[in-house]
Length: 442
Image (cartoon, rainbow, N blue to C red; front, side):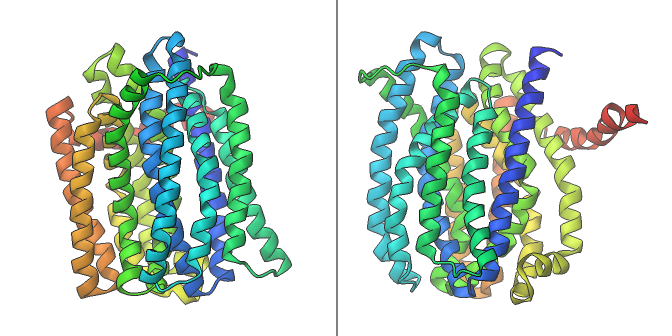
């Protein structure tokens, strides 16, 4: 097996395994929580997680892509300075996240009329400290084209949190939201230790302050930071605006639909994680034609996997919602059907951002994602005000279509990407998969 084939097989195995187990644990926890919490409490927890996820993505966006990019092609002599500089940036951003967390807690508690939010927001500041180190350690391993430690850490983090919920469910113990945050802290702490043990072999820290590298990492990462913020806002603003305009209960119903579609998002996340470090290397060695092929091929494979899953979920939406969330959440069925439609555009959007970042166009990526986020926010406000809960789904669908058109135009201009080629690769995937993996066995 060639080194290139070995990379794809190994990275795909661990990354897909991480996403499969991650979705299993996350979905398992959701399945139990939706039965253990009343509709108001579940809506409050969904709003809380949406908010802290935004802050996590903000920090991760500034650190992760810049660290992976520069570690991927800089000489080993520079690695210690790059990593030390990332840790300094990480510390500063963690302080900002904690300050924002405390600053927003009172405001959001009043906006969503959920007094229980105040304490859990404050407690999550402990998690911010640990998760920052975890991001750096995972990025170091990914930059070295290794994913075993990333998988092990994610498995521990998600598994421990799920185990706590499962024990409470099994013992018939009432779930308290503050205890969920304590469980998150324990899971992140153990995950960070595992990630450190796997990544520490790749570097030795240089504790000198290297202003040049801090400036270089920040200048690259600031656009990825903005992109991550705009992107996560686009994916969570519908739930947050539902909580503000309607109620946490409405937000919880929409969250049900989103959670179900996360089940088919495993390959999108897996391939995105694999493609970014590979495309960062390929742009340096093989140029834009190689990156063009990487985009078209990866999106084509994703579409081939997603389309059957979307069709099945759409047809059996009523049954799926009842099995997963129970009869209390039948109002999530029409939401799920609309959400499934824009799931088909997710591979294009996710790979678009990764490709632009990897070819050194994070600024352009930021402006496009920001534009889409602004459109999404405006549409959500108008549609939710006039159509209620369904308005959130229609708004996100419309903004996703607009973002798709813009992204394909940019990729055509920058890399001569042919959108039709993604569908050709999708169709070719089935016979190729059959001839390579199924037919030889029979």
